[in-house]
Image: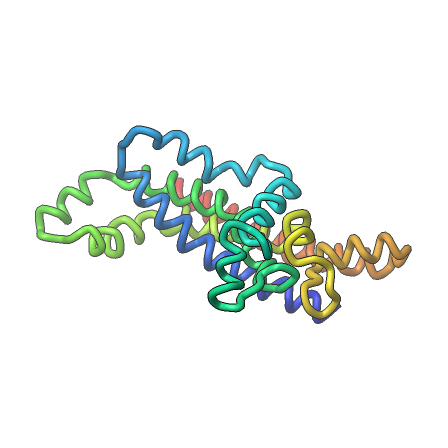
Length: 217
């Protein structure tokens, strides 16, 4: 179980980092932009939150599979194969957790008083400086809460991860997949132990993120 726990934490941390960078950047851009199709783009970014994980897994296979639109070029040009690897599990977890970061960051940026941004621009601040010194500090609690929820979601990811990374003990078997395997094998004690471990970690994350959200108000 320790190997699966370490792999789960590694996948969840890297997925949260990727989803965090992408989600915060997209939220900052969309919160300040108005253009035709913005609503459609917003819906696409939130779509992984409502689609079944197996559907997301299928889309990822079509995209990064050995014969996928991007996957075949990665293999032919760089010799990279993401299927049945822990890196593939990271991509799957990143996609399913992205909406949590994006929506949390978007809401936080929208709450930032526009007068602060106007004052910063008046003083000569550029867009990057405005983001780093004004918007990000004011929105940090909402962003942090979204990141924690994304981490918890990445830890519990199952369907898309199983389709992309498979179930290879010691290589791609995360805790959620280990629970499924234990139940299938009739190892109820092992399944209970893994389930309790995941529950404790996720509960701690939810409690902390809840306090951060309360502190915003």
